[in-house]
Length: 83
Image (cartoon, rainbow, N blue to C red; front, side, top):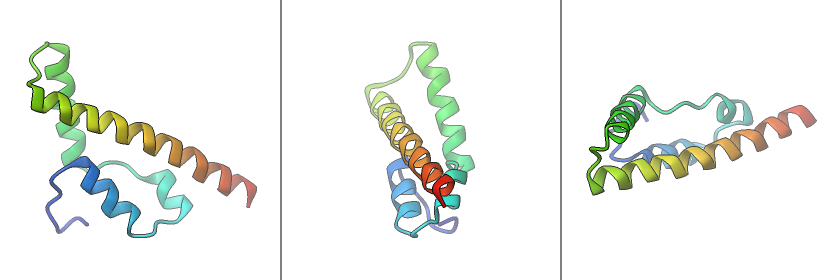
């Protein structure tokens, strides 16, 4: 996954999930450094009120993926605790 260019956070998460991660890998998952930096930039622009419509859509995608991954990590933790 590190060698290929990922165009969106959705693509990055889909690539991760299709790699059939273990529950431990799901719990440990973090967005790439590139996406962490992009999110910081979007948050700064959002706080200053200067997000474009395209950037707002990108921010919304990230928010939705973050919510999904939080729920997935919670489920993976439950699975690990039950084992």
